[in-house]
Image 1 (cartoon, rainbow, N blue to C red):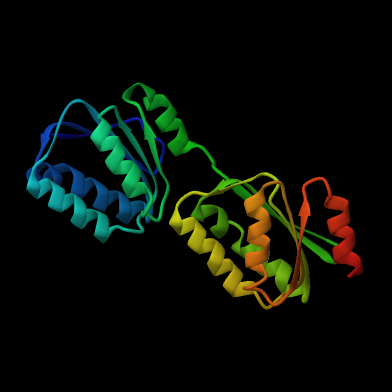
Image 2: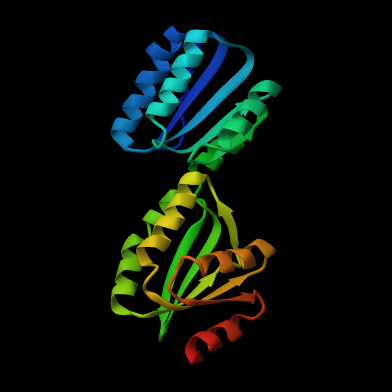
Length: 241
């Protein structure tokens, strides 16, 4: 059986699974709820709760689950799954590696944390311009919405400052939430790759240094990496090079 949950953050669909879930449960409850929410919101968040009474799926429900996922592959912002069932947690952990949106697992006694994660603001991107240097600070773990929020700011800054001397600040960056966010990042690079003249990358982790070398293969600019304590040196290089 599938039951709709209430009192969730705006734009979130909550579904509780118990007993044996059948194809009829999908057709009667889950599919209409997801389709209606997507029609209203465009993209949604989802909370799936599998309590101790959950016994599994019938073959028809498993097929419906696959069909729904393929049809709405890009329709979710993030997915929270609450379950104490080992095989189910392992399955969602594996699925989360290929989905284009973030998936996070919670225990069934952590529903409040799951609700809070779905409702909270995640990472953000700050765009600032001072003299000849444009600074992009990537903060926290970024979802696709973080990139959509800066579209106008980037277009405005880059249209008035070309060629660009870019300072990419990764000191507080924790990575991407899902493949969709990563694809948004590369789409941004492709769109503006011809505009930067110089790119200074500031970071505190080894992988960020590797990211600077990779970035140099995609942009028509000189790139250089600086450790987090050398911000002043990075700014000086951008202004004097």
